[in-house]
Image (cartoon, rainbow, N blue to C red; front, side, top):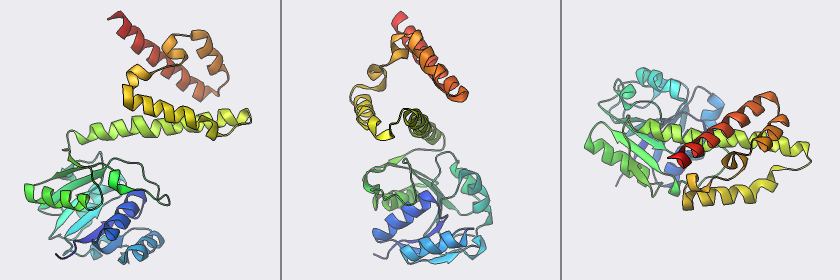
Length: 260
């Protein structure tokens, strides 16, 4: 069977991992298109593709054009592409599939629910992909494409996919910022972030074993207002506000549940 011919639009974190993974799995990356010529050239050289910076130069005969840019650019990219004969899909969790309708008769979404960093290697085989498409044949093609690199392929339409995206922010991006805050508190005491690793690993393990509601501990769960205020007084104003707000949310949640 002839290898799937793919154009990747974008050269950032997600585009880099998907292009590498698909290339390693046997897909043929025809072009990497990015406004940043250096980034396009670097990624294209890794996957044996042509580097381009002009969307009008995208090969219209590609089997799949995969738009992997910042969310706000997806619609503009789709509107600028030449008329595409194959599938045009994006990788965003928050952009509706209909944003691509102007680019092709066959459109879809291939959304990987994962955090990506360009220079950190990642095993894509366990990353869940949530796909959507304009028709059954296109969906089957995108499922097969995602299945080349992942064992976890699912479906989510433009109405339900944003719930995955919001949950990802709540469960990944916000805790990561809180770890940055924690690292700065630790540094003031002469410690580094590594001392929290066992605590974090046990927290995540318990959340998935027993559920996060049953696993909650700490001063807010106990309603220990004296400790909460002592901790908040140790923090810069912005972090103290976050600490108090999250503590109040935890206290309120368990107070309501215990009254029910």
